[in-house]
Length: 107
Image (cartoon, rainbow, N blue to C red):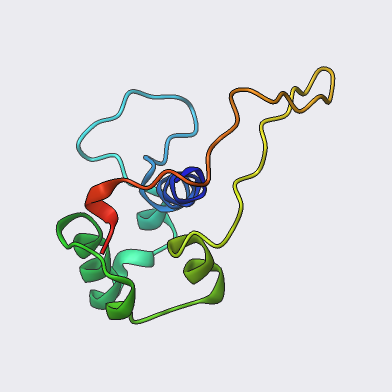
């Protein structure tokens, strides 16, 4: 699940995060990063963003099935270990697990 969360966070940060350079308070009219680059100008892109939050996604129904997406979706990629940046040591405890699966996600 750690890899999937990382991909979701990267997607949010890249496209949905409010475009604020000077740390202003978010307002209703604040544009997102996707708005600033014109990503949502296309109707298909707008619909894809809407479906992202309103539709349950199933791998076999995905239009684009990139290899990296499949590896993360089907949990083939191993989660990277947590490393202490000060010492470079990889502690044995507190590592993200690769065996846990939420029951509501099992098909």
